[in-house]
Image 1 (spheres, chains in turn blue, brown):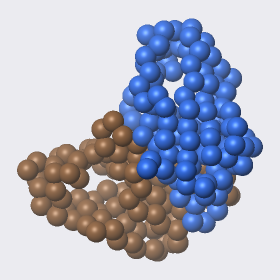
Image 2 (spheres, helix red, strand yellow):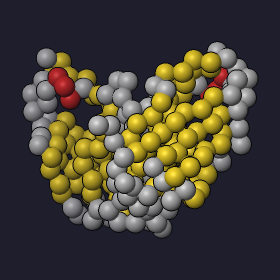
Image 3 (cartoon, chains in turn purple, brown):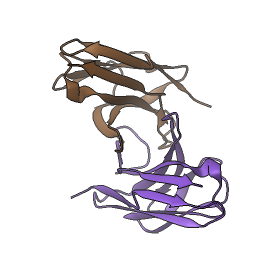
Image 4 (cartoon, helix red, strand yellow):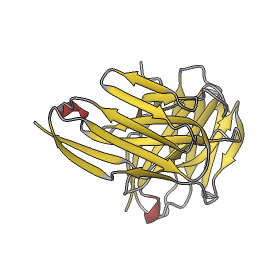
Length: 115
Length: 112
């Protein structure tokens, strides 16, 4: 069973469209994240949620709106997609938010291509 | 913002050789993590380090949390072809932010 699962794995869409990526974790963790990996493989945090509450928002355009219906799910909705949004988006989770011993586990990624 | 400098950027080695890569930072971190990413997959945790000076092994992998809390290294002994991938260091800054800062990655290729 996949601990952090996200769908879809691959998504090709046109500029201007709105799309969503869903994420679920079955680890019983309180905190979930979205990370973005660019074409140079650089990983950077976008958002974190702790018990459905937004904790980190790293100057991401407001076209990106995360939603956490419960602590096991964190979805990412993107409005008015742009070419520069093409990247791999990783969902992740950890048992706590910060603190000593915090370990973050990643999903398999969602490859978004905007054409 | 906080940054991690990871080196080398890439390595091409012969099977059986040992590998070493490291990360440094100008600021203190209270956790260091090492991940491996295979093509088309997400980063998979290899080793987690939580205390300054900690030395931890996982099979052929050994990693250490630097005494100054500003650096960490990962060693792989007797490399094998399946070690191929991108290795990332990641640090959690002090201050309980919950945010991981990633290094730029080290791409490892192993020649059989």
